[in-house]
Length: 311
Image (cartoon, rainbow, N blue to C red; front, top):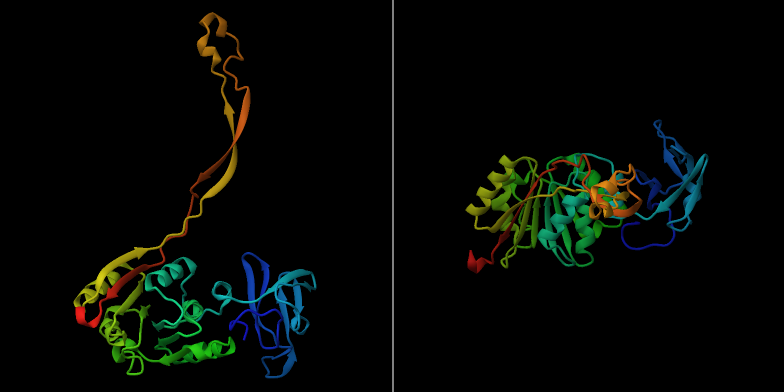
């Protein structure tokens, strides 16, 4: 239950992040024994590039501690939404922090919000929603794949988040979100192959006071179909966004300083070979764009549903 709130000590059953390097992190369950392929209980030993970690040794250790491996060391961290996104088991393609931060901002998600999400996928975005809406909000999340639904619900329960989320097996494009959700949602998020089919059901799910909707589309054709459906069902302020992350390269450069005093002198006095030779250098901090950058992930189509009286 390590996602439920800040903790100081690792307890048995916690999800723990094993941090080796910036790009080398793993999520493990803090249990002393696990079942092998034969179904037998064996000691839980986690193998890394820097050697083995006996998981029983980290139970009772403080989060953030440095632990010894057989050929090195690692840090054990309490998980959060960002770390979970980097380490979760991929059941589908997932969204990452640049897109997720814009989604949360555009949907105006806050503590107490009721959010409807489809589809659940690997639960990456779901954990961000849950962190934003707790302790008084709720997340209704839907997926058409039954096995993914069960795995997602099990993860939420094991992370201590089960009281704030319900995962439902349903094809929302055909069946909608159901009566349980009708008129309750402050925000709706769609990550579907044909999100335009779910727009009328999203209207039914939203409160009479209106709400926000965001749809993730990998191609612009899909996004255009969503825009047409949004206008048809009374949404306003329809905006299409693309988030591209650019990391500037900052470095210190030595720039030669030319002595231009020779320009003030007569030509006869400037025949020396050293007349135009730089006499000193100065250091400057410079910033430049990288040669390559992360490419397109998808388009975010965002819109506002006005209050019932204004539709």
